[in-house]
Image (cartoon, rainbow, N blue to C red):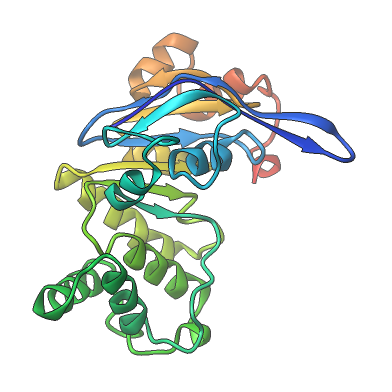
Length: 252
């Protein structure tokens, strides 16, 4: 579903000069799997996902998403995926139901098909108590669930989520984690970034550890532990990031 070869993104910063955010990344995400891209803030996770979603063009390298070239066929990529960025700002005056209906209409959905899809997502993301509240009046967790719903209202087979539970309380985060897990049960493909080790452990078929724009390890949890010789993902992550003595509190 996703394949990259030498994917690279370089930014020019007035203070820092040339910044290599993603450095010759070779990434593959298989159909039907939940793949977690794990890394600290600044590891290159968001930049990688934005290149895959055609928000950024790569400086170098290539990527194919759902069979389409992200540079040559961006419109086809956008129709094929559901993409949630870290920014959850939508139309404050619309209700959650109206947000989903609006975005569904942009994908050509209408009538009973659209109504049924809105109700399906309403149930899947447990939005019954606030779906008819105006978006601007919602809590952070409620907004995040509406944002996920609008990003996948067109029922894509591939979903790309950038830190979907970041900043949420445990109950709000659980709703989203449960939803991602259910996607795996339906054989949908999910690529999501996180810096929460527990999420990666419990959700992912495979994990990629990204550090300073470079993929340090890829595999199942068991494969990564075997490769690093560590007893758990926390130890393995510290080892791969070269920060074995750092407290977890410093990573978030």
